[in-house]
Length: 303
Image (cartoon, rainbow, N blue to C red; front, side, top):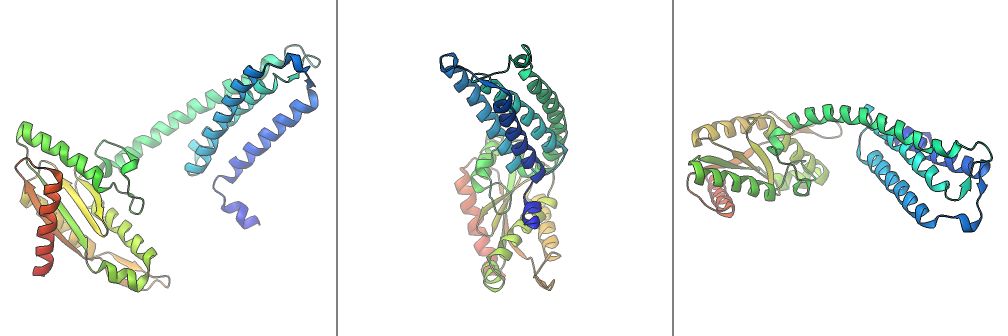
């Protein structure tokens, strides 16, 4: 049981949420006096309860999506304080606290104020964190972020995202005559690797290969997963000889990478086929992919 509890991500923050909400409701019911039904403000209660519910949704989303750290902790504390304030505001429509002190009900906004101060600090920390992540993801995103195009296995963007980036390069080709190159890389014997070592190892190989390609290209280049065991690299404003040199460097780095099984036994090295073309005339992205696939098949047959 203890191991299960410690395995829950952000368990201490989940516990804080449950305890805070429970204590708030219990204290309000215990110390408050229930108002007569005719004094209930139903519309106010619905609006304020809705705000409390939405803040709870935001808090749950934060706890489920973010890793542990000071940003997550500060966001959770701030949202929890706002939730308490909104919850008190809602309960105030049903319970009266004037018998304790006439100004007690006026203090319900202070947790929200404190929560917004804490969240403002968290947002500054989040900005610092995001600045670092933006630099890290530069070669995966090219200044455009849309996670509906993300490949969940490799963490790279998909072929649809690459199509949009190629369309941008084609527009620059039409406007400025700036040529660019595109390469496709294919894992050798990937299906046999999955048959021998399992799908899980195969997906790990895909993820490692995507990261390896990203590490060995330039900051202005972009790597995406095309389909299956294939990856596409975009080289903007690059001549063919330079693109081939970079792609050869990627393939050489791949030969140095090995997978390991559960007994730490070294498996086959990662080896890649590739094809690379220079785009000098306006064309559709589909035509570029067709040329790449044709050249890749030819290169594989020539090996």
